[in-house]
Amino acid sequence: MGVLMNINHGLLDALGVSTRQLNELVYAARNAGALGSKLTGAGGGGCMIALSDRIEVEKAIELTGGSVLKAALDTNGAVVVDSN
Image (tube, rainbow, N blue to C red; front, side):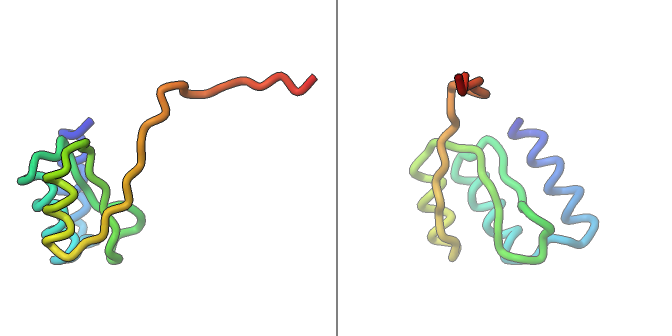
């Protein structure tokens, strides 16, 4: 997954939808140990996603000027709820 994120970011950057600041955040996360990172959304803004559970990645993003919003994966996946 991380490798595919990295490839996708390179393609998006080649299309011109990334920015210098986004690239700095993406590469700071990778250099700190993220498995993958890329811009998210339509680009041109300031939002990226990094695949990691390392505090070093959070610190690197913050030192590069970003803010960290952590999200955890739900191990349950899709759940069917009986409404009866």
